[in-house]
Length: 547
Image 1: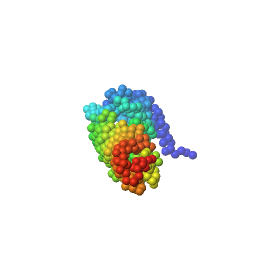
Image 2: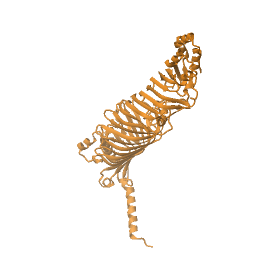
Image 3: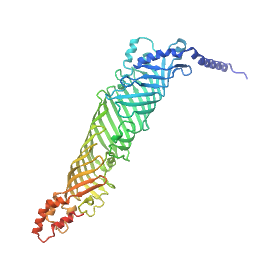
Image 4: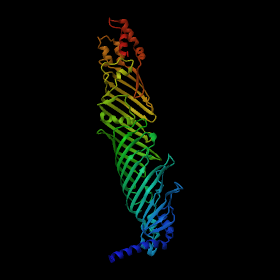
């Protein structure tokens, strides 16, 4: 069968192209362009750029450097800012082959290592990259391999970024599997980009948006509009917070970030599992949703939290306020508002903030109100303000049977009804101070006092319990034939000192009977001497206080 002439022609062309692809590189010494590329790249970036041996590939239409190195800002490090074992430099083949004219169309860095450093003033080591590049281009007036410093495409493939601070505050953090694609890059115009990386702790970061033009004074303040998706984020593992701060979660984050170079706005939603907010807290089982809106001033390094809402069970705790960044420290001035929240919905959050109930108990019904100021360094904040609980029941904990020295109230074993508990709470890493404590428990009466909770959870409270003489503990005695004398009645109403120790999970509550007897001895003796045919008041007091 005779071959068709067209097939023969096509085959011949293919052979010629193959021969050209193999032969042309022999006539082009790619290394003759190395000095030009190094000079022009160094000028564009404002950093010394060093290229290794160059070769030319017709098939890929690129020059291939064995390696590349971009110097760091000497104020930060003498080590390279970026190193890569190979760099593919896309070029226009026709002008290169026929006119020895170099026009770069793309850069692809293979498995680069990028060194990112942040100093105490908030400046990054890449802040000076590209500084005054546009003005240098205009002044040069010569043809360049990068006309107007515009590149059709730039890529980082399977890179690694090592992030550290000056002065060193801990081990550097490594971000792996870094992939970046930038289209139509220019220092003078905005450009689209796509970024992905794996964070320490296996978090997965994806960013897509536009950036530019590059800020001529500080590249870190380049305008930006991007959507961010972060999966399986662990803030402690990722180095956002120190593990000693006690903040932990496993979160999925979706956010939108917009910056004009002077201010940055971020709005987002955090779906958090295993949330813990303080060092003496514990992770909670219930998922929590956090929404936020933040406005940040890049120059002042301060910001406004317009609304941060922590939601669970259909209710939300709201946080508003400001923050400032000094060196590597963030200082807070926030306000938390929790107005009349249903306790059944917010109880799941209590372990996250270090609040524990007696073992085997839980709160049922009622409301929680809190207005708290959160101030000081974010790594060790102080939380201060009034907290109040109304009309709830501590199921599974019979308070009357736990007070050493007092006779239990019959029929109260199922739990303790609480009308009101209010206090001013001041909590810091040094411990928690509770002042102006007031408690109203119908079956017992009221109690006032103050106390502390150590960082390890140890309780030390002194309260004065005024027993209810018409019902409850005192009422049982009063109602038993009316034989309680006036002295004992007065002792119960005036108050019994109570000392609370142990821990919140296992409190030890002891009434100080010796002080009651000493304080009321005169009245008891008087009633005993006068007598009126009724029972001995001391015996009656013993019945009241016997446990």
